[in-house]
Length: 243
Image (cartoon, rainbow, N blue to C red; front, side, top):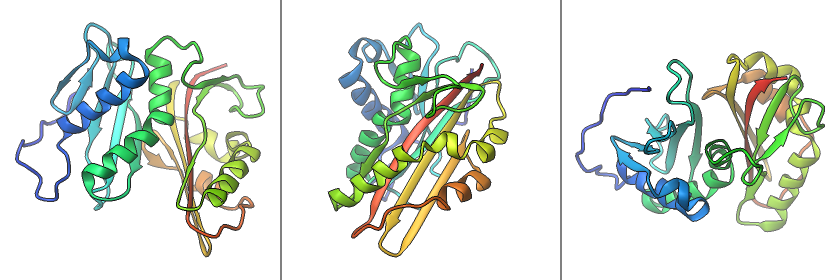
């Protein structure tokens, strides 16, 4: 079981939702997609716990100074002591409560989709399964991969970045830099994020919550389209086990 210090319950002067409020919203998000999974779940101390089953989603401390940024983690193996959490972080837009809705919409299509796939039976309904010989997969691993989500104020720009991310077969392309960071035998969480603007590019690859500098640099060095406004794209993968 994973334990963490309980936070004080005082209202946040920024208007940022409490950890329990975030988890109630997560529960509603899951309920939209998998009602049977969400129905018995309970919120306690900033965690959404699967009742009588070994899964949990939890709010982690915000690692940024921005109130519209949310750090989330999950495990579907709470009964196996010592196994790490699968971590992600997502930013929304607007005031903190509005931003939470945006962030959870992104979450449910990326790391949330991987959570649902792992917690709801692994049938391929929520995320794709890729073996090591699949061009989109990771060499040496069975990998769950979410869809690539793209968003931004200009739809053609977002679509162009999304198409490029798909076309690069990104996990396979940056595998030489990424594979050394997979330090668990099972369930390594991989976050891939990109923001392209007319005059800048921000890339980020994280494994188990930590930035992988070499993989991030390899991703940033790839050819990306010219855009007319800020465009964002991201996906999430879980390197489930070695093949």
